[in-house]
Image (cartoon, rainbow, N blue to C red; front, side, top):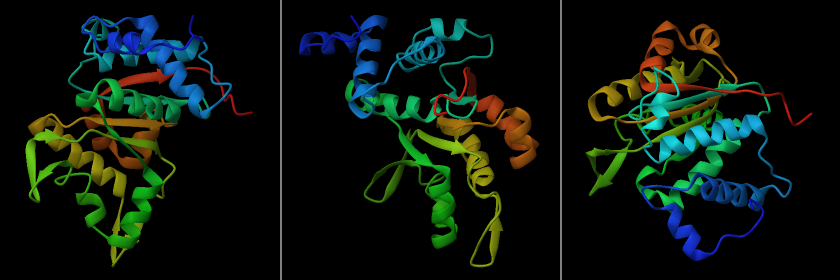
Length: 227
């Protein structure tokens, strides 16, 4: 069933309030295969994808999966190297753009942000904080915060110097987005190989604490499939 192509009518049903989990998974599989020919979903994958399908559709059952889960929070997806965390967000970025445009988000590599800070200074940080709203005539609309996904948190250099300023760029961004989360419900998604202790060691206890408040903690189980 999951290998069959879905027609236009079936695609439209995915947009229904009472979504069909099987049909959404069919589309997830189709999107995955469009870039990776042998893309498949194992049991570890299915657990994560089903959880995030519930999240993106605003399904109240998502909050029943864990007493700390909230549909108002972002996502902190972590696990072993090579389990497929980055691919999850790439697929959901394409899926939401097509079926749930109000839930679409931007994926950005943390290493690219580090490079941008080195080249452009603080403007690279502001882009992910006070300027992370939809703009109208160069004015940010604070009622429309932009959800961003920070892919591979932890691979970027921790301390970067630009124009004499040395900053832990991702720590600065995450703390600023926490403030914007509390004020304007700005959501943040993260994929990382780090666990909570690693986050504290590399970004400080404040970042660890803030991430607990602003993100749902989801573990991607499994081993490195790239070996």
